[in-house]
Image (cartoon, rainbow, N blue to C red; front, side, top):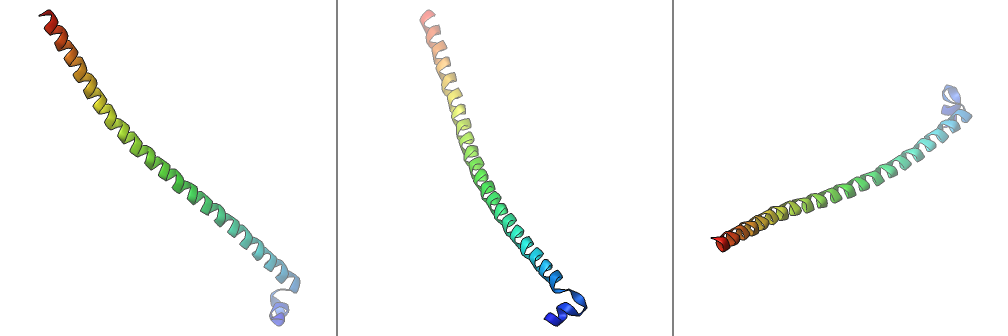
Length: 87
């Protein structure tokens, strides 16, 4: 291997510098992959929270419809009762 390094390709110092650069790039790659993994986990967490909020929103929308029905029925009954009192 030393012959290939010194016979026209790279000097020993160049080889060591290249090797150090590859090591540095590998470390940066690992760091970026770790950050990407954290971001992926955070994205999944936010998607779950959004899903829960969607379910809760649909539940509240359904309850709102029932609320309007109950209030409308109560108002109708009150009007009928008042009309019956005076008629």
